[in-house]
Every structure is written in C-alpha cells, then in structure tokens.
Length: 469
Image 1: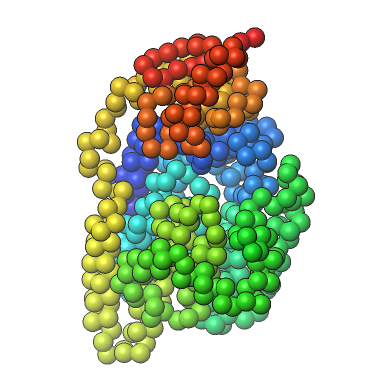
Image 2 (image 1 turned 90 degrees about the horizontal axis):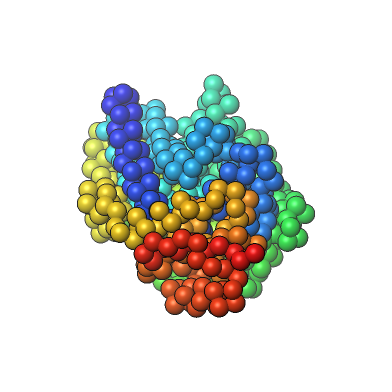
C-alpha cells in the first residue's frame, strides 16, 4: 500500500508541477510574490546581502523566514524560479504521507487514510496554495502533519521538535499557531508541562520578533506587517483590543459575508466531520481563521481559500477529521466499521463536489491551453533574452519573475537605477499591477520623451529599453 501511495503522490506532485511551471512560462506569475522570493533566495544562494529592491528591506525584516535558506541550498543545484515551483508542489503533496500514517495508526483503516489524503490533496485551499505562485507558508502542511504524527510518541521526539522549529522559522505569525498547538498537546495528549512551555515560549517569541527584533533589523525601522486593523495597528495593540473587546472578534468573523462563505466551504469540503473533533484539536483551526479574519485589508483574498493563506487550514481540517473519526469510534465501538466506511465515503464525495463547484485549478492539467504558447508569449520570451544578466532592470509585474535573479530589479512605475526597462504591452489580467496597460503606456511615453530610455530591442508588443548615458 505504501508503494502505491508513494507512486500516487509522485504522479500528483508531477501534475501540480506541470501546471505551476506552465503558468510561469506563460507569464502568469508575477513580481509579487514569485519575483520577490526568487530575488531573495538567489541573493542568499550567492552569499549576497538578502535585501529586496522590491520592498526595500532584508528578508528577515519582511517576514521572519530563515527557512528560505533551505531553498537557497536548492538554488546551488539549480537556480531558477522553476525550482521553487516544483519543490513547493512536491513538499505540499508529500505532506500527506505522515497524514496517511497518522490515520493508519489511529484507526487501522487504509480506506480512510486514502480518503483523507485525497481530501487534502484536492481541497481548494491546497490547490491554490501550490498553484498561486510561491510562498514560504506552503511549508506549514508538512510541519503540521509531522507534528500530529509525532506528538506524544517518545521515539519520534526529534520529528516533533523539527515540526515545531520548522513552524517558528517559516514566518513570525506561525509562532501563534504553535501556541495554539499547545492546546491539543495539553488536553488531548496529556503532555501538560511540554504544552505550557510551548505556549509561553511561542507567545514570547512572537512578540519578541514583532515588537523588537524585526523592527531593529529592518531598514525601515518598523515591523512592516503591523497592518492588521486601523483600530489596532500593531500585534500588541490588537491583542489588547481582543482582550478588552470580545465583540470585536465576533464582528470580524461575520463581516464581510465572504468570511462566512469561506467557513462553510472549508468545513463542507470535509463533510463537516472536523466539527466532531475534540475542541482542543480545533483550537489551531480557530486560530488560523481568526488570524485571517482579523485582517482588514487591502489584500481581501486573505479571507478566501485562493492563496497561500489557506495552507495551514488545508491540513488542519483533514487532521481534525482523523480525530473526529477516532472520537466517534470510541463513542460507538460497535459501529466502528460503519463509521470508517461512511466517513471515508463522505469526505470523498465532499471532496469531489467542492472540486467541481469551485472549478478547481487542477482541472487545467487536461486543458490544451496549458500546453500552448501564444505569439505574444514567444515575443516576450525572446525580448527577455536580450537583457544582460548582471544589469539592473525595471520590469512590469508579469515580466518581473523572469528577470529577478540580480541585485537590482524594480517594479514599474519605479525605475530606480535601472539600466534597462522590460515591458510587454499586450493586455492581460494583473500584468501591469500596480499600474494598468494605459498607465504603463503613459509612463513609457514620458520616459522616451524625456530621453531617459531608448528602445534597445522590440519584438511585437515586447520591448526592451536601455538607459541613455
């Protein structure tokens, strides 16, 4: 069974990789976020100071993500955004292996194990976590599945520590997630001393990072993601707001209505079985939705399951399914087989329905458009080859991640000290963000009129400009 599972995971990981890489070569990846991570990881891999010319801070001040050093090691093997996309796909997909082992150890059912794996792999949040560019947060399914696989088992102590450390070095906000993991550790596993230590250390670590360490090392001198709410602009102030105004939490869950929709879709994708899990196991689920719903913008996709913000939930919900089934079997021991069979069928059916209703991106693997290259894409590819490797560049959003392996790259309308400009004036969604096609044309016209840049290479609507000396 394990061999068949591994083959299945390799096939699924390969399919996700094909979709992700095809999207990149079709210029459907952007400066935010693939280009940002590509530049930072390339700098790390070459031993340069990892300062982003996109957001003007070093990578530890932007998000506390020492885990990116792991990807820098991969870049020593093959330095390309494609490396990020493929490694991300396989790391997320293989997060389901310890999930399967958890089901097997808890229930002895391979059928439920496969059902849980499939529900995780094709949950809409998992799909978009993999296929929406690259983000460090997509490592959380691996660490979370390892946490529940190893918790409470002495011979897996190193795996347990690895999972906790992994979460803490992935992103500063995941220190709050590890604090939430202390609840199942305390109430379900009975590891009270370890749970209290984990909870207190995680909270201390989060506030130390956000209030002191990250502002201290930032070129901007502040924690630059303290934009949770206009009423409470810093993590510490938000904490005080929550403690003194509990109604604020309720309002955050109810408005706007898309949040309720996200909750319903998320739980229905697993046939609402997670709701039968012990409350302590649901605490990390609540924490993740709370983190997302307390946010007030401007990136409102945080409220939905269409990007990397859904990555932790994508594995926490199937984990909750496992504990829910175990709980139901303990309550009704004579109906163990019925519970295992019905639970397996329920989450498989729910998974299929949500996949169809949500028009999941995985379906693109069978669409001819995924494997076709249009004329404008060929022109853009040829134009980018004309940009010297060691030069500084300013590029529009869709071209940015194809040029980001250099010390200086800027996102238009910013030009910085760029020696070259790269534009593709064929229209398309999000290609010119934060500009649009019209504003980009105006910007280019003004730069030409002022004799700052001249055409260096043109192929159709793809144009490379060179700075006038």
